[in-house]
Length: 433
Image (cartoon, rainbow, N blue to C red):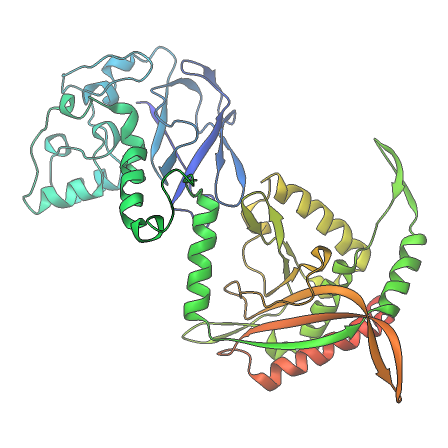
């Protein structure tokens, strides 16, 4: 029996994925564990290995197309196994590589493991069920319909084989032309405001769709409220310069480089982690059944990548030195921009930091990223006039705004957290202890 190669679920929120690149061609011989293809999700790129050894055939998963999780994208045949006698050909399906159709019903009907189990438990002959999946594959819904008496009859697969290249797209949504037509209808109220020919339609990719969905979910289900404080940065900037100047050198392939290079954001991240350790009742996540009290402070940091953003996480940031945080953040940010993060490196976390100071933004309010109950928005450090003991002086000041989930963090608790954060920023030597 040939072995199915499916599109696996590599992300908690993943419903579809795209094969960005195949590393093997139709007819290639592979060993178990060999690299087959790369999946592009909305957040990362994951390499998928062969589940068995043999010959790769009947490749249906096309590059750059949305494919539902669990969909079969190819098959691995044992050496010498005749593809024409396999369940794939027995179902009367076109082989994309050979363009052949067989109407024989000999062999094994192509079906998902769940569909087979359901049919077996319900005493239904799966060979009598017309499959609605790609290339006639019997899926759960087909078995349910057969059990209900709706469609336990064989449908000639030739009727479905007329456009095999489109079926994988249709399972993940309508054909591109159909999607475009529906989009034009759904968005007609917007598009009619603009002259024809004055714009172009750029389809949303998976990342942008996920970001949009999660932002709408966050703003409609989480009661946000905001607290803003101004922090003086001069002591922190001076300490950062001293620490960077004292960094030892290390040898690399590119020569000797500093062992670490601290950024203001690294120190902000550390200050937030220490503040949450001191105010543990704010280091929580809301669920309907109970408050999740976290034992560690895992801080996510928003990183801009082409087409969107991702939030890699520094685990137990309250226990790590500034140099460790700086090096981890540099590595995570680099791999995030190349979509090389593992799911465990960006999922979860107990809070987050979003910094737009490098763009000159004075202050802003960030949207909470569930399951977090807080997120800190960091503005630019700039020279401002401040009054000290009745005298006007110049200081470098940074405005920060804490967005909180009011179900989990009340106003006074959020204020207590901000007081602790401001104290660490303005007295940075404490972060070294």
